Image (tube, rainbow, N blue to C red; front, side, top):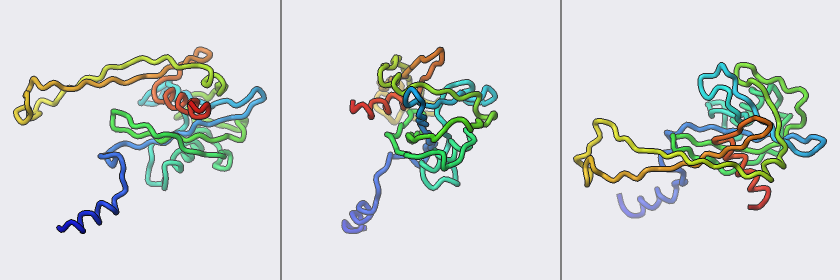
Length: 206
């Protein structure tokens, strides 16, 4: 292979996160609702019958599948399925920064408006309840931030003999910040809290 062939291949390549093809990909929607007292953010409480994160607070959303042409399609599809609404009930859908988890997951958040909430019929197999929080709360409230230390533990068959230092190699440990908001005795934390904090920062130009 000559230099021209090499650079032709590089020129055609679209950069992405290295290894992202093996990541699990999810999309969520921050549903904004207009009420008499101002804009609110709608949240879900996950069904207690779910195996993964039962009872936790989240945004509508889920894993991308073959039906979705784009990440936005996935966010819309999951929102309509979970809230029992139509695609036409959602407007002004815009992407935010995507989030890469240290656990091999990419989350693509979007913000959008729900025209109304009176006809929401949440899917009971996925959603325990829905509630709203004034957007103003997140704009005026800094999240509590707590750090989680993440250690490294190589597998038993790791080839220590191939690296300098062997079993005494000085691995770099990791740290992860977890965000927490508490509103009306409801705790919003984790990725959901990080995404809404990011959204509040965007609209305040911070």
